[in-house]
Image 1 (spheres, rainbow, N blue to C red):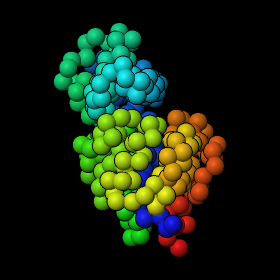
Image 2 (image 1 turned 120 degrees about the horizontal axis):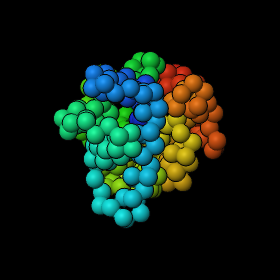
Image 3 (image 1 turned 135 degrees about the horizontal axis):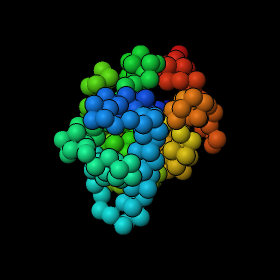
Length: 233
């Protein structure tokens, strides 16, 4: 059955969260006299991501959107550093940096090319408002927004992938998950979706991202533009 829709992981796959967060944290916090390795700050904040979502996946906490989880996680990181002088307004503004993340250089052209043939939507743990703002920040056009908020749960729960496909009006096998993370693609494949891996070898720092998939996938691209060219020619 032909692929009709592409659904995307966003953090790391489409946007360079690490460099973006490091830059914004330095811009907002260094005027307060705070200094650190800002990439390590970004890593520490991101490292709280999965544990926070696991509380929701396991039923320990009711579903809430990623803005709330990111703000809670920021509080943890600031407390750990002893940075109690950061006021609430600064915390909120820094937390919104996740809405302003810069795309990888290949993404804009690739999204335009892919949209000429496929329905495009995020299947992200980010909520609808966040996905809207990232699209506007980076001049993308989503045909719809699916993912965690629609399912009321977080990946890799199967219903996140299945409800995303269903919301677009397609069967799982007509829908392809695009991601730079093998674990995400493995979960999507188990839910019945087709899968495409793109390399983001520098996501977590130089050479610390995934260059090749560690699970079977249907398509592989050196980056999103490479994948787009393969899928549209």
